[in-house]
Structures are given as structure tokens and as C-alpha cells.
Length: 263
Ligand SMILES: NS(=O)(=O)c1c(F)c(F)c(S(=O)(=O)CCO)c(N[C@H]2CCc3ccccc32)c1F
Ligand SMILES: [Zn+2]
Image (tube, rainbow, N blue to C red):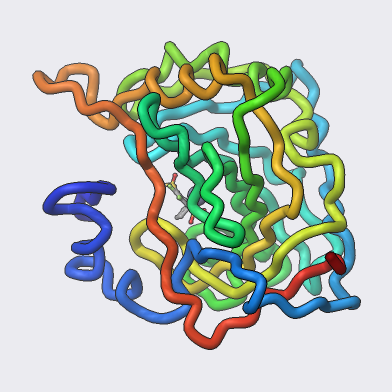
């Protein structure tokens, strides 16, 4: 589709000019505020299957101009939801070296340094991501909030290759690793709401699960993520840094955020 950015004339306030859903209802991200919460005792722990990938397996690490993404094998899936959701890819949103606050979701007005999304599609109903992406029961995304703190060895498994994908559309193969290690310890404590893709075309097709507990990466790891990449092609005369790739919180409207835990 048409190119879009996070700032300037193709920035998020203009997305709806080419992508009408971006101006519609049920948009993401949101600021998860206490008054929206409702405890739901029926919310089961998220169970991830086949996330522990062998280093013999190769994953594609790529710069798609909007984020750094890792393509995931279709043997990875989530169980514990009404239907099976098969993994497609994971990617990140982050701030910049001068503004280390780049998460998309906020919790009671707190914005974290970065956020990871593991994107899955409803493989009980749809054959692939493209068929699922615009269906109301099409996608399930796991969101992990990221703070600057302890060094994260799992994060390093792909971060050490980031200088091979500095420019848009560059890709490298990296050895598989345990994707479960990128998630917080507790998969039973999370926020749950109906929302959308946070990038164009902003389809309201996402069942969001945002884990209560954040993970940490070191300041050096954050700076590497926030300063290594460009959204422009290698041959472009003007290099455009890729950072601040987060959409601002959208109106919650009358949405309730279900929560799987009691304070
Ligand atoms: N925050 S988010 O989870 O809503 C989200 C993104 F923020 C994001 F950047 C991407 S993308 O593919 O890297 C680039 C724009 O599609 C996707 N990609 C999804 C959307 C469309 C699509 C098609 C095939 C594989 C993945 C995706 C995404 F679901
Ligand atoms: Zn995302």
C-alpha cells in the first residue's frame, strides 16, 4: 500500500486518509487505566506451544521499514484461547536514544521503553495471515512491555545480528532460539481487550493480550535497538533513522479491559 510513517505528512494523524479503519472504532493501542478493568475469572493462562526453537532452525530477521521483525515457523501456536492461533511474526516498537519511552500500550499513563508483539492468526478458521488479517476473529497478538534494566540474554540472540539489517528490506537468517524466553515468567497474569492492528491498515481484527509483568533489556541493548536501524533503503541519498515507531493511545470508548488477576 501507500507509504506511511509515524511523523510528518504521512504520520498517524493522516493514516485514515488512505486507510479508513485507522479512523474507526476499536483501535489500538490504548492506555490501560484502572477504571476500564474488569476481573474475569474465566481467563486461562496463555499456553505457548513449540516456542523453544532449535538453533539448527533458521529464522528470518528483517527490517521492513516500520520495525524489526522475526518471521516465525507455523509449528508455533497459542493454546488456551477458544481457537488455535498460529504464530506469524514478532516485532518491536521503541522510542529513541533521547526519549527511551516507546511502548504502544500504556498502563495507568505509564509508557514503557519499548514493546514486543508476537502476531498470531486464527488457524482454525483461516489458512494464512493474509486471509485472517482483516477478520474480526482473525488475529491474536501477545504484547510484552519492555523496561530498561538487567541485560536480556534472549534478546541478544537476535540483537547481535541487527547491524546486518540496518536498511529497509534487508533480511538475514539467524539461528532459532527459545522465543518463550522473550516472554515474562508469568503467562497467567494479563490484560485482554478487543482492538486493532496498530499500523495501517488498522483492521479491528486483534484479540490483544498484554502481560501484566514487563521484561527488561539493558540500556546498551535498548540503544542498539533504538539507533541501529533506518526506515530508508541502503541506496537512498538521505538516511532516515527508524525510531519512535509507536502509535499513540487511541480512545478506549466504551471498551472494557478484562484482567486475569486481582490486584
Ligand atoms: N502492532 S501490530 O501487531 O498491529 C503490527 C505492526 F505494528 C507491524 F508493524 C506489522 S508489520 O508487518 O511489521 C508492518 C506493517 O504491516 C504488523 N504486521 C501484520 C499486519 C499485516 C500483516 C500481514 C502479514 C504478517 C504480519 C502482518 C503488525 F501486526
Ligand atoms: Zn506491533
